[in-house]
Length: 81
Image: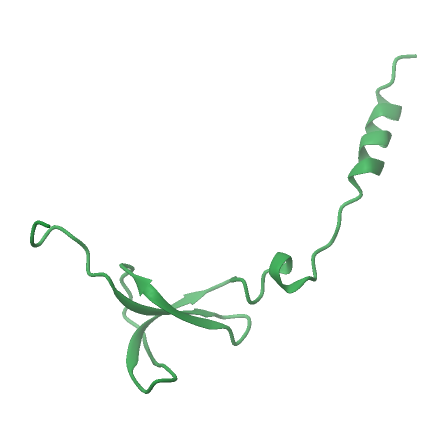
């Protein structure tokens, strides 16, 4: 690898602002905030608005759409007379 052309790939904590979900992973994202992780070390912190800890698809609180009813309503509205 060439020196000086690659971004700094380091451990970073991503924390969901709407719940207490946080994950430690590696990233090249730049941030000025830090957090002390469970292992006692300090890592850069990135705050997220939504993650798998709060997204309706992953939490099971997803609203199901009645697509069959919508298709029937469309066909009924635009059916040939």
